[in-house]
Length: 109
Image (cartoon, rainbow, N blue to C red; front, side, top):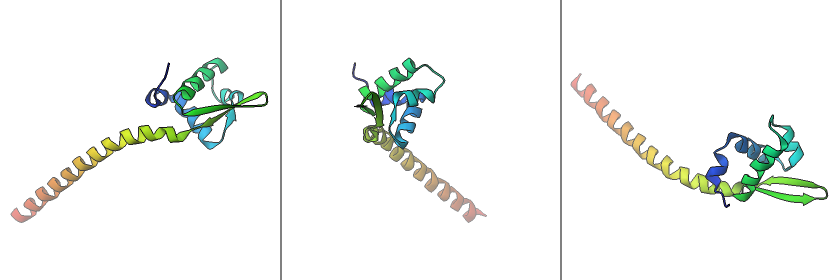
């Protein structure tokens, strides 16, 4: 099953895993040791992150090293950007309206 980035970052544990891996690559056991859940649960989270392209897992000897692939978050940033622009426009309009209303009150005074 192909998963998308939005599904992956919807879970707080997966977001925390991404935060850890953004700092530096780590093996699966090191990641699992940081959480109160089982290694199997962390492996499932890593599988989802890998399926959507946010994490790459590489074999180094006997260890599997996980590395963040944050460029895939561009999809989320682009989606959020459209709403940021929308709200900036709305807030700019509100600011102009309030300034206009405040100016009318000063003129009457």
